[in-house]
Amino acid sequence: MAAASSCPSFLFFLLLSTALFVSGEATSLLPLANLAALTFEEGYTQLFGDSNLMLHGDGRTVHLSLDERTGAGFASQDLYLHGFFSASIKLPSDYAAGVVVAFYLSNGDLFEKTHDEVDFEFLGNIRGREWRVQTNVYGNGSTAVGREERYGLWFDPTEDFHQYSILWSQQRIIFYVDNIAIREVVRTEAMGGEFPSKPMSLYATIWDGSTWATLGGRYKVNYKYAPYVAKFADLVLHGCSVNPMDHRTVSQGADAGACDSIRLSTADERTAMAKFRRKHMTYSYCHDRVRYRSPPDECAIGPEAKNFLPSGEAKLNYRSRGKRHGRSSLGAVL
Image 1 (cartoon, helix red, strand yellow):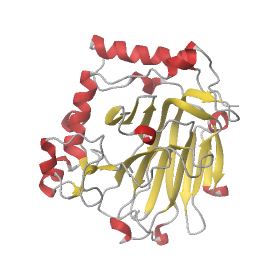
Image 2 (image 1 turned 45 degrees about the vertical axis):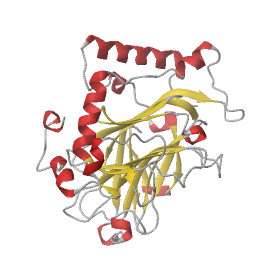
Image 3 (image 1 turned 90 degrees about the vertical axis):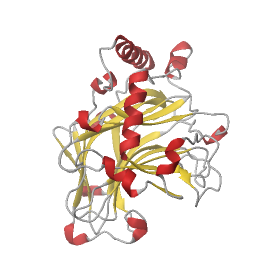
């Protein structure tokens, strides 16, 4: 079975990360990004798509294709209860309206009505308009309370590989793009069981989201431009695997508890995250008064509310400050 790292080594890297941040040797970069990647055979299995999933580089790069016949997808061989999950992804170029590429944790196959999910979704667009990145968190089947956020990026995700990572612990979930924290979801009493807390598998898929992905379904997938190919590399599964029968962590006692004590939110990391969100967030469920008359309890509404429309979309003059004009350096972004 897969060679996913054990809880003790996982804790070591987390402590090392914290020490580096505190010592000032690193600011917004995450040392966890240096974790060893697995080959496809070591950690994953194909879900669907037959020949639309292709392995390259001795199984270290996976190509998922969407055509008129089918999309494609793969999943981790193991279930995990907390960990660090990462992939470098290159998205399809040219006209990609309606195309959805997803990198996410879920247990929908085990808990049909009470499933948990932590998503990166990449939403394609018409030619000349950029891909959008959406994150979402569901817990205990709470799909009626969507916690979506959407963002622009400071680079073209179709030109090269970029790293997208999810850090999931008992108390928080952090999303990263190129090792920059872009969102933190902290478990609160108000969220109750809506914070993901059951073992999940890691998934990667490409599929036809014509009914909703681009301007609410206004633009569909045009198979004239197929196949659409999403490329995945540097696949990292680094966390606490669980027994699929009783869902207990493989590491017991103190080691299992160590995996639940993850905390990587430092002052530098929070500052970088705040700057990213201020420049690049284009939608927030916390500001969506069409869906929620009052913000969900975990939302802390501050002065930034004036920058969002009642729909939750960022106002044009606010959003344009983070719009990319050519390639931007990381320093310019943050």
